[in-house]
Length: 172
Image (cartoon, rainbow, N blue to C red):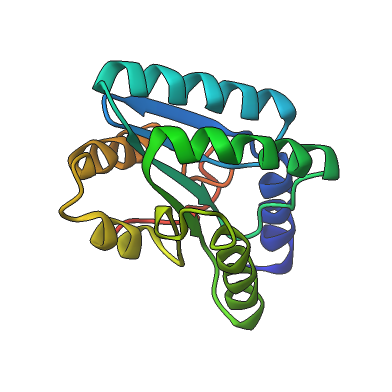
């Protein structure tokens, strides 16, 4: 890809919206530039999924490589969601995509922050969708997560923009 193509990809990543999918037993979020409304919608979908499944669910958040960091206000709101996640999730998986030293450092920092909670084994940080899918094998709602990943792929949620300029991630 030439320099212009890379610039278009970065611009598309900055403008990417958050996509949330829910099914009985699981909630999947593919993050773009996070907004407060996205967090409200995530909390609502989490409550619905818990109600549908009759108990804790698996929550997966995918942060494609190049997605801009959340604003301070949004990060502060995320801290308020942690207790809700702890009470309603059998496991929380964050897929922080990207390669190289900087991506590894970001995953390490996120892992450290999440493990500072009371339920350390609830939170898991992964570098790819494939490693996340491997890690959840054997969990009660693993099939629900796999079906949401498939649906997100079919809807083009892993593309950098709605026109499908370039795929940011694929399972496999």
